[in-house]
Amino acid sequence: MKDEGTTGTGRSGNSLAASVSAVIRKYGMLKGGETVLVGLSGGPDSVCLLHVLHGLAAELDLKLHAVYVNHNLRPGEIPSEISFCERLCADLGVRLIVKSIDVKGHAASARLNLHEAARQLRYRAFGEAAFEAKASRIALGHNADDQAETLLMRLMRGAGPTGLAGIPPVRGDIIRPLIETERTEIEGYLSAAGISFLTDSSNLKTDYFRNSIRRELMPVVRRLSPSAVPTMLHTMEILREEERYFGILVTKTLMKMISRKTADRIELFMSPLETMETVILRRVLRRAIDETRGIRGIGLVHIDDIIRLLRKGDSGDRLYLPHGIRVIREYAVLVITSESLKRLSAYGLQPPADLRLPEAGLVLKASFEDAAGEVSDGRSSVVLDAGRMKFPLTVRPRADGDFFFPMGFGKRKKLQDFFVDAKIPRDERDTVPIVLSGDDIAWVAGYRGDERFRISEGTKKFLRLGIVKGNFS
Image 1: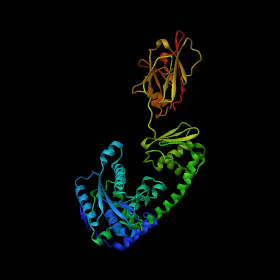
Image 2: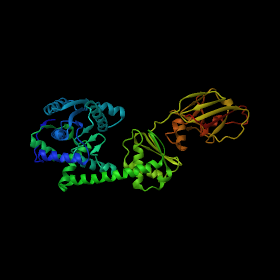
Image 3: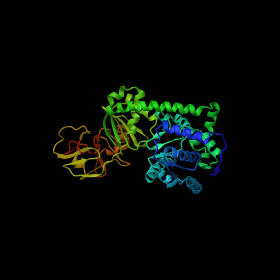
Image 4: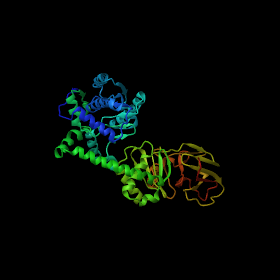
């Protein structure tokens, strides 16, 4: 990292300030009289933003603070960056808040890549600093080139219209006053004013996707079309306007379709979904997914997978998407959920008894009988030879290495293979009650009894096991 004076013509300070002021008015970023927290890294964008807002402070009656977020990823550069930002803020009479975040630790614990972990913690730090400064707006230095790079990145990764609309100029309390200013203008402004800035060494590496776009692809794009960036900005603005319209339409549509909703589960009526036009259906599904807690990383390819499930799947079919998202096509509703998978606890069972299994939503009934009685189907109930069994019984979830001898099959079978052949969804397998006599499986509740405990002409004492739905609310 180094102090740099970047050469370039750029627009004059007054011209750039006027342009930024126009963007602030265009998007309603500031009304005047606010306290604004500026995200400051020491790089050209954030330095330019702080200087321009400082120049507009009197006009807009702004009170400025700045925040530097230490990501703890470049220990050799951080002290000089903080010193630079402290000197800059002291010169401008702006208070600097320094926040430290543990990106590597968060990435490991949340199973995220460094980029996503840094983004999450950085915005959390911005919020904390804004609270300390009593700031109602957080100004960030994203510029027009960042927008163009974002468009190209998302286009190559398969984003839909919402993603291609780019970085929003305003989102909640976040504002981006430089969003229509090109990087060459920023650097030209700093050079003309003799303002120093820092270069982050990580921005020079091409092993990050955005850096490759910036350093390798964008020069080619500019050579082919000098006005490429403004053209892309205009396209993204059109997409944002259309997305706002569709957003209203989707909200009205979704409100009529929700059967049930919690923080991490939403159920949508199948009837309108099956006949909905794809262009609206994609947006409705995207919004529904966004309504569930902690959902990120669901792309256009996953939305299209859900549409195929809707149009070609059968009741009971399901999808397993990234980040623990499950989509289940039931008879009347489509379920989208990020709920943690349940797992049955272990229980003892001494017949006669009714055993409540809340994790499975079932009650297991066990009773001794003097005769076989009604023929059981092995699914809702089973009759076994109690004389061959060891009591008390054990009821537990599946375990590694489980096997049994399914009635009518004639030979040993791994429980895992049985689950696969029976098409038991994998998110339900840990709630299937496994009834054991000693160490031997006697009944895979709801599916099949074990041949070793089949009744015969010599059976004198019969054990009937059955399951019924339970109400545990």
